[in-house]
Figure 1 (cartoon, rainbow, N blue to C red):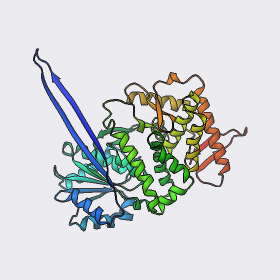
Figure 2 (tube, rainbow, N blue to C red):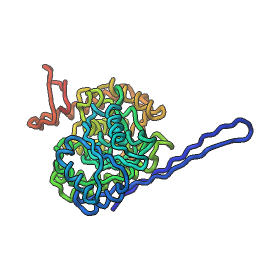
Figure 3 (cartoon, helix red, strand yellow):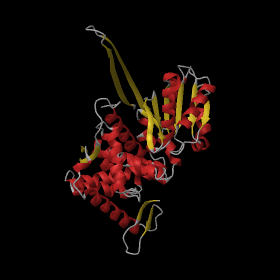
Length: 419
């Protein structure tokens, strides 16, 4: 059954040459459906393609990996309803998520003679979606676009949002737009070819939205902790469908409250996204987004505990779940300076306040507005806890390639984090 998000934006432009006012008021409604399908060859999915692509010029944009694994099958799905879209294979990574890639898509759209009624189709992970969305917003001042996310993080987060964007300088998603899709097709069976770490990144986003918006989803992931959910996803087990759909519904529910960030810069979906972006950038994006979100979520939870906003038991419950599903809670670049820089960057982006989402219970949260709300020495205490806990986990899982540990002569952890 489709899950829909409705967004409405309005604005006013006023000019007062005298006592008489002249004004223009513009408004628009946009609703898009996120629909789950069994597979690429299902009649429902082919019907979805026909409904959104027939009688239109279409450019499909995908990645080399998706092209190798699913390119022929996706083209066959289009062909089954008599459609043959233009096709672009684009290298999509955080390092190539730049305006150069956006302009490559724009050039391909121009070469394909995509008209004003045409559409772009993003077939890939979150980076592919970000690039295509920004290109669509620019082409002919706004083209429609469809999304077929092929990663778990894309299906529960990046591929179902309203934004597109690319990195610029040291800023992740510094250039971007609000440009919601026309429709999104979620096909969980596409996730069978993902690696374990790629699935874990999606689970991080699921835990994030569960913490703020769906306590039943949190308990569901908790009950199948360890590799259970990852195994369901990678085996194509239908048991994964419910947690995926719940995560999507929770995300859309939060986005629909303030889809274009007009009424406020306080957003529950920003949990795990205050330190994460600067941390990723500090590693030149060697640390992937989902792992950075997990580290940020662990920091926010332990911060809430040390501030007295969150019970220790609940904070540790969140951290324990992150660890149990194989996610990192620490990185060697995480230090007081990075935290302070992250706070300053967040305040610039969020109307002058940090607005860091801090859990106060499962399903409840408040916003850290200013850095001086943290007493002297509190941030170092939080960092010390996470570093020590990560070191303990690394030692107990020393046979795993997930963590790397280097200890100085004194035996204190010097370098602990995701490798």
